Length: 582
Image (cartoon, rainbow, N blue to C red; front, top):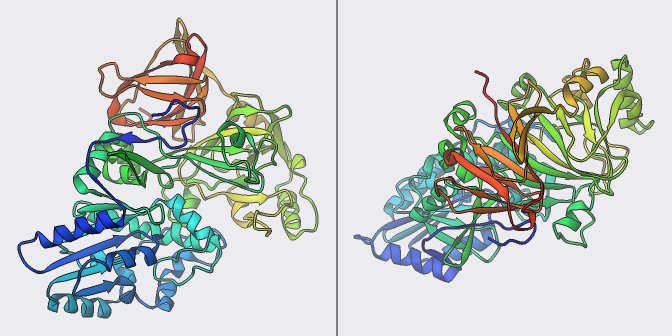
């Protein structure tokens, strides 16, 4: 692990064998086929949505075969799939409904039966390739899973390089493809992945075009076991935005030619990747695999019992330094998100001010004695372009200082102002933001960004006014405990939110305990710290300023102390975990 400031490519070292490049991979698979006891073998290559089919299909056709089946041939027609998925995709520009469909629902029964008969009659090697390959050939002699991380899929969508499942739509807008991916494709692929993971023989990393890597199932699960037995970091990824700033660009050494960087997704396991270093080769896989296949050790039994195989805590950065205000927005309450979108919990959140420039502020809660109908009318007029919405007339603007913590339970109007670097600590349903006003600006594509007043007006908690915000939402710091060289503070979150946050200030080692629940932390003060196990259960792990790190529940007790450049200086971490009321 490099000691350079802010490690953008953290990895976990695991012993094992890896096959790097198509020549090595195909040679291994061919030898697997020829080593069988009979002269017939079915090889199935199951694919996540977003892989480059032209590359993968061409490669796997090089395996000597008697029959090659592409699952695209057995999907229902595009018209049928669009009709089938319409209740989940909907006509809404952004939001859909979490699908209940499975991969089998997209496949034509008649076409499937025909292909299975062809496979049965075929002698020698049969190669079945594509999404649903494991459905077509459930008893395949060799099963390969071509995996993908969602952040890479999104990049490919923006470049119009991929299609959705069963839909020839590479020319559609990013938002259309992303919505179908989020509400339909990824749910279908994830369900299938969880169902077949015990049968998969080889896992294929397809994230970098032309640079495939493959590992055996034994190595795959060694990676899983290694990741839940020590502190880990997922691979952060960065995106520009219309309000984006330049703090991360400067501090993290990002592309200077980029217009800005608005977001850093530093702990969003559904989106991020994990890197494993095996025999001097880096293997990338979606970090959500860890949630699926080692949920209890990662999350802890009580958290798993409550949320299932979902990672409920999200850390990300919002950079408005030398940028603009975020959109004025509100998140739905639990009942609304369940009824309208099929989600089981909502996006309660908070803003931790990692850094600010003079004049920084956070819009939070409504001013006293406003007229709700008048505000909604003004928002709708502004949406039509008839006027500029006067946010300061209706919404509080609180001055923001470094290390302030603003709490934002669902239903609370809010946004960060310009000239700040926000560490957003929230629950995970991260796309359910109802934008009410976007300061009369366009998106990076030159088009107006979607506004969601009709949704937003249904969930605004109008009683959350100035007095409420000051009493319950603004920098509520409560001392918890302390000793010589350290102190612990509770900084939130609101009692309606399930996430508890604790801040530790320290110049000496501090002992933590996961308490049978996953911990997510960020180093918010200090150059670097070292995480250690009191009983040497994991190797010492170094973390740098602003890095988010995960402590799996199975780790138990761990310590954090200032390291090297930070020795003798005050450091601080903010820790989040799921709160359970006794």
